[in-house]
Amino acid sequence: MGINLSKGERINLSKEAPSLKKVGVGLGWDTNSTDTGVDFDLDASVFMLGANGKIPSEKHFIFYNNLTSPDGGVKHTGDNLTGAGDGDDETLFIELAKVDAAINELVFVVTIHEAEKRKQNFGQVRNAFIRLYDQETNKEVAKFELDEDFSKETAVEFGKLYKKDGQWRFQAVGQGYNSGLQGFVDKYFDN
Amino acid sequence: MAVSLSKGQKVDLTKSNPGLKKIIVGLGWDTNKYDGGQDFDLDASAFILGDGGKVKDEKDFVFYNNPTGAQGALVHTGDNRSGIGDGDDEQINIDISKIPADVQKIAFAITIHDAEVRKQNFGQVANAYVRVINEETGAELIRYDLGEDFSIETAIVLAEVYRNGTEWKFNAIGSGFQGGLSALCANFGLSVA
Image (cartoon, rainbow over all chains, first blue to last red; front, top):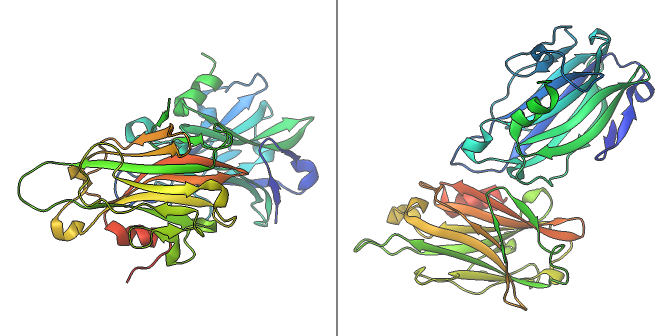
């Protein structure tokens, strides 16, 4: 069993899991059940940010259409179109040693595909979580279950891995935004 | 003024209305007018849900034939067979302070009686809504108008009230089902013979 984090909580991975090299990051969710209407398609993605809090290039935005970062340190295992079933819906693999030294932060976000058109929001999403596990042992390091308290948000920052004093840490974030993926793009790209 | 919600939206019920004890959940609808054919009979019901979003047993399904639930905290005030007239077509009274501690959530649904036989669906229903009224003052607190997003459905979960810590909140749901009441019951862990 890993550590259950609450919103805002941080852990130091170098201390809690010193042998951790390859991190599996699983993100999961369920949507309100219905047997009619439009399907939900939620997407997990990662913004790799430099010390200035900005993304060095568009290649550092890892999502279903750009599955691997230039340094090879972040890999997205692909889009899950339904979110059906238990367990992780989308997974990213992070090889900490490979992540470019200029990258200070990996921000994990989940957005609703075509949220506006489909009239969908995180008020219709349940049981969302992000968990970190050791890819080599499958042992869970930490898990953050986002409480259900989202409403009209269409994008949520689940958590972030960040470097402090040369050590990787993880913070449970759980911050929702109303402006979809575009909101994050605007926030992290230096225009 | 009542808060008008859009689908998926969640709002505080008790936090923003301190002292709120008794509420009326009013559900309303109109059906397409046409001569001949069969009458519409829409039914409002409530599912009293524990952990995991399931009912404990059939007593947790409150409808015209089982009008009381949650140890008396919920009272369905009766069937309206025609949906005629303005205002709420059916109402469920809830005494929040009496809801047993193991109840996490109460879901409110509308189903079409005999939908399959009568070839009716929510495409023929207009102006469906759910609203929450403070029973003691008569003030409307929350309202969710369903809009026109439904067509082939024969059952719709309109909304839920749910526990959030020590408070109660309201979630506009708007989930549709084609399988009528039986699909709805299955969704909440109740098998209907």
